[in-house]
Amino acid sequence: MSEYVRSTYLGQYTDEVANMIAGELEAAQIAWSYKQAGRFTKIFFLGEWGTRLFVDADRIDEAKRIAEQVVERTDPK
Picture 1 (cartoon, rainbow, N blue to C red):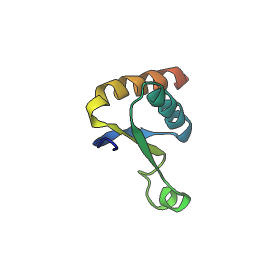
Picture 2: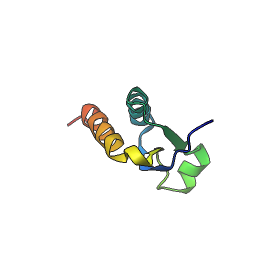
Picture 3: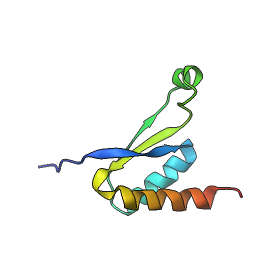
């Protein structure tokens, strides 16, 4: 029997950063899913520029910390 997971929006990231975040979420055993904009969606809808990640709502705080850490590591400041 599979466990029901309620998801919530984590954020929108470049495809590369979303992939790194997903790896960290898997390592932390946090359930996640994604929605990636297609070519035409990116052209016609300016808000659809990257990959949107969704995570287990019960672990959103942990997932946010993970995402922030990944973004900090990849930010070229």
